[in-house]
Every structure is written in structure tokens, then in C-alpha cells.
Length: 369
Image (tube, rainbow, N blue to C red; front, side, top):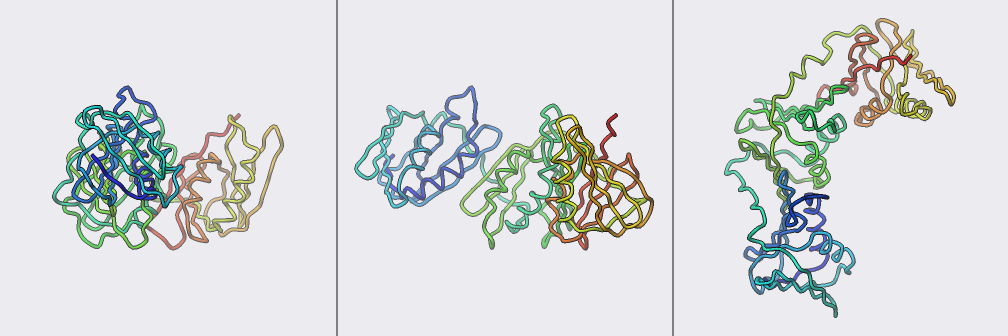
């Protein structure tokens, strides 16, 4: 393989796929990045066997071929080059050694055989649905905070994608909190299915959904999901298992409804949480008349703030994990929100005022003795 391309283009492509390089692996070849020439383009791929990212850039192809280069070294080299530099790469297929020329300098990297690199799954012929990139990015932002990090319950480390005739629902829960975001679809999906997508992959995908006027195409097979956006393709294995019926934990009837300013509540909880400690992270609410009192008592001190709100229904005292509550509040983009309570020990519901497509459910914290 013998190619040349601008250093800036090489770096952008490497930073895109580097997200899929595993930090630790028993398979040395997975620490490398695959370079392949196809017509007048250079395809660059990384994988950890669970999810893969592939992108392509224009390049001058003097001799077609392929190479697998150490991911860290080639990426760090590209970081250190001037954007205007032209990078020339020449690979010896017998020794898997690549000579990289830039400016008046030369670097040699010892790589791996491209024949041993895992094959990128083939894109299905028919896509499931197309969505605006910014729409999917916002949906993911509003649910990813609720994904579990506990690997012994795999389905909760993923996000449920529920495709219906009219809507796409994305759901995440770690059993202490739940987030649901829905969107109406302009066209009906090619098939109606439910799949569980790893949260790790979706975190990386959300960082790549940056184009204002572009779409992302979603493809699904029996055990994989593909996201195609511009020149980037992401594929990941679906999580096996059945996602629980999330509708069972969404409150249908409430005994106390509160309407208040989103920013005021977030700032009050944030200030109260300053007094929290690893063993005491509960922020308490006292609901009475038209006042919501936020308070926290700790060994280091105590805090109490009164917020003027609109309240209908029962008065009550209730507490929530402060970190969980702030995570949910940060995803609400409306000035006002509705906080709906069912009781001091049963789930509460948060939603933006005037919007029905997003809800967050929080389980109250058990009072500490």
C-alpha cells in the first residue's frame, strides 16, 4: 500500500475510529487500526469485537493495499503534525512495516497482518429508518444518564429502541431512575421491532452526531445495529435479553403536582448537594401550600432553601438521591417543569412543561436513620 493525504484529514479520521480501540485486550491486533484502499478513498477501521467504527477519507492512491498500524502511535503522530502537512505512507506487505513520511522526516511503524484483522460486518440492504442527526442526539442525551453501569444486569447497561408504526421510543433505566424519550416518525419503519443497544456505543455515537442538516440511517439485523452518518459507519452487537415492561413503573395517577422553574430547582439542589457525603446523598423536599423547601442536614452543616411554586394536591416530605435528581434536571430544556408525586415512598415523575415526549421517573431515597 502506498498513499498520501493531508495530515488534518488523517487525524480527523483517526480520532473518529479511535473510540472503538479497546483500552485493554488479550488480542494484540485489536490495538491496531486497519487502513484499506478502495478506489480513491482510504477506509480506516477500529473494533473491540463488540462495536466497530469505520470512516473514509479521500487520498491519493499510488499503490492499493491494506495495513494495520498501532492505534496509539499513529494517532499521536497525527496529533503532532501541522494541519497543512502531507502524510505519505508506504507499507511492505511481507513484513507489515509501514514507513511514514511527513515534511522532511520519516517514521517507521511495525504493524500487524491485515488478513488477521476482524472483518467489518456488511451493511444490510434495507435501512430501518432515517432520523435527523440532531434529533437523535437530543434523544440520547435525555436518556443515557439513566443507563446502568452494573455489568451483572446486561440489559440495563443498554438503551431500549422501540419502533412502532408512528413513534420511536428510547428508554433507559438502572432501576433507581428511568428516562423515556419519544419522537413521531415521518415514515413508518421497515419493520416494527424492539432492540437493546449498548449504552457505551450510544455514548460514542452521540459525540459524532454533529451535523445540523444531515440524517442518520439506522439498520438492524438479528443481532446487530448499524448507524450510518455521513462518512462514518458504526456497528454494534445488540444486547440479548428481554427489557422489562417500563410502563409498569411510570406513575399513572399522582397525589401532588408541582410546577416550578427548572433552573431554580437545579441550582437549589446543586447547592444543597454541596453538603453531601458518600454515605449521605439524599436531598429532601418539603411540599406545603405554594412552597417547595429544599433541605439537607449533614455533619458539616445544614442548608434550607424555599422555592415559590404552584402546588395542587397533598402536602408531603420526600427525598431523592441528589446526583440522580440533578442528572434528570439537566436534561430538561424548558423553563418550567412539572414534578408529579405519588407518595413519599413511591416513584415520582418529572417532565418539561408543555412537552409530552420526554419523562423521567425517580424512585425516592430511603430516609437514613
